[in-house]
Image 1 (cartoon, rainbow, N blue to C red):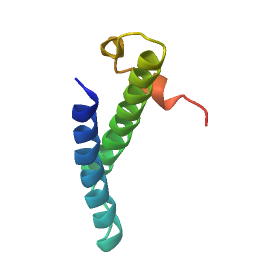
Image 2 (cartoon, one colour):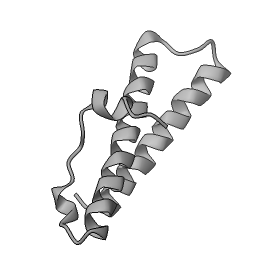
Image 3 (cartoon, one colour):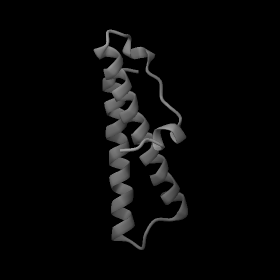
Image 4 (cartoon, one colour):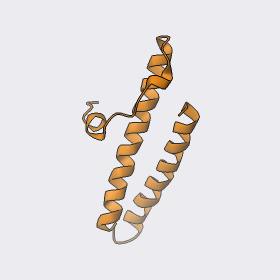
Length: 81
Protein backbone atom coordinates (compact mmCIF):
# COMPACT_ATOMS: atom_id res chain seq x y z
CA UNK A 1 0.00 0.00 0.00
CA UNK A 2 1.44 3.33 -1.04
CA UNK A 3 0.78 6.85 0.16
CA UNK A 4 -1.79 7.45 -2.57
CA UNK A 5 -3.75 4.36 -1.49
CA UNK A 6 -3.69 5.55 2.11
CA UNK A 7 -4.89 9.03 1.08
CA UNK A 8 -7.75 7.43 -0.88
CA UNK A 9 -8.74 5.42 2.20
CA UNK A 10 -8.61 8.61 4.27
CA UNK A 11 -10.79 10.47 1.78
CA UNK A 12 -13.42 7.71 1.85
CA UNK A 13 -13.37 7.54 5.64
CA UNK A 14 -13.69 11.32 5.96
CA UNK A 15 -16.68 11.29 3.61
CA UNK A 16 -18.33 8.59 5.70
CA UNK A 17 -17.50 10.36 8.96
CA UNK A 18 -19.01 13.62 7.70
CA UNK A 19 -22.17 11.85 6.56
CA UNK A 20 -22.58 10.17 9.95
CA UNK A 21 -21.95 13.41 11.82
CA UNK A 22 -24.42 15.28 9.61
CA UNK A 23 -27.06 12.62 10.29
CA UNK A 24 -26.37 12.83 14.00
CA UNK A 25 -27.20 16.55 14.08
CA UNK A 26 -29.86 16.73 11.35
CA UNK A 27 -32.00 13.93 12.70
CA UNK A 28 -32.67 12.52 16.14
CA UNK A 29 -29.16 11.20 16.46
CA UNK A 30 -27.50 8.01 15.39
CA UNK A 31 -28.57 4.47 16.04
CA UNK A 32 -26.29 2.36 18.20
CA UNK A 33 -24.97 0.69 15.04
CA UNK A 34 -24.23 4.06 13.45
CA UNK A 35 -22.48 5.27 16.61
CA UNK A 36 -20.35 2.13 16.59
CA UNK A 37 -19.53 2.65 12.92
CA UNK A 38 -18.58 6.28 13.58
CA UNK A 39 -16.19 5.12 16.28
CA UNK A 40 -14.71 2.53 13.89
CA UNK A 41 -14.22 5.22 11.25
CA UNK A 42 -12.50 7.51 13.77
CA UNK A 43 -10.13 4.75 14.83
CA UNK A 44 -9.38 3.74 11.25
CA UNK A 45 -8.61 7.37 10.38
CA UNK A 46 -6.16 7.54 13.28
CA UNK A 47 -4.53 4.33 12.06
CA UNK A 48 -4.22 5.70 8.51
CA UNK A 49 -2.61 8.94 9.67
CA UNK A 50 -0.25 6.97 11.91
CA UNK A 51 0.70 4.74 8.98
CA UNK A 52 1.51 7.79 6.85
CA UNK A 53 3.68 9.23 9.65
CA UNK A 54 5.53 5.92 9.95
CA UNK A 55 6.10 5.76 6.18
CA UNK A 56 7.42 9.31 6.07
CA UNK A 57 9.72 8.75 9.04
CA UNK A 58 11.15 5.58 7.53
CA UNK A 59 11.69 7.32 4.21
CA UNK A 60 13.32 10.32 5.88
CA UNK A 61 15.89 8.05 7.52
CA UNK A 62 16.66 6.14 4.35
CA UNK A 63 14.63 3.06 5.23
CA UNK A 64 11.94 1.36 3.19
CA UNK A 65 8.52 2.95 3.83
CA UNK A 66 6.93 -0.38 2.90
CA UNK A 67 8.10 -1.66 6.28
CA UNK A 68 5.48 0.53 8.01
CA UNK A 69 2.58 -1.45 9.44
CA UNK A 70 -0.88 -0.55 10.69
CA UNK A 71 -0.67 -0.47 14.46
CA UNK A 72 -3.41 -1.95 16.64
CA UNK A 73 -6.27 0.40 17.52
CA UNK A 74 -5.52 0.33 21.25
CA UNK A 75 -1.94 1.42 20.54
CA UNK A 76 -2.84 4.24 18.17
CA UNK A 77 -5.72 5.45 20.35
CA UNK A 78 -3.44 5.52 23.40
CA UNK A 79 -1.15 8.24 22.02
CA UNK A 80 -0.96 11.47 23.91
CA UNK A 81 -1.15 14.80 22.07
